[in-house]
Image (cartoon, helix red, strand yellow):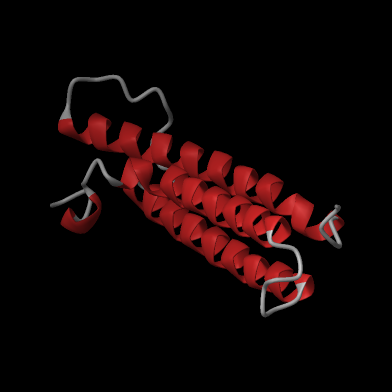
Length: 126
């Protein structure tokens, strides 16, 4: 009997949520900086940019939640308490699932912190 389905045994799952956060960070700050640097030259309003970045934020949060669910599933739905420090394949997969779940939580909070300026900034300052 397989403990973990084959499709989520990759080490790459560990980096999914932080990668989503990094891409979200770049998208938000590059878009806002470019829009404000070229004030008035963009064919769309500041409010439109905020709404688009809000949609990007929701997509990023959705991806991170999916990553967290897959990590939780890999961790065995929380069935094994840490530490997973035995030199076995099962403990290695449980540790990876737990670590990925923690990174997903951290990345979720980081995306929220990156999105906070979208709520409070209403226009570019000269």
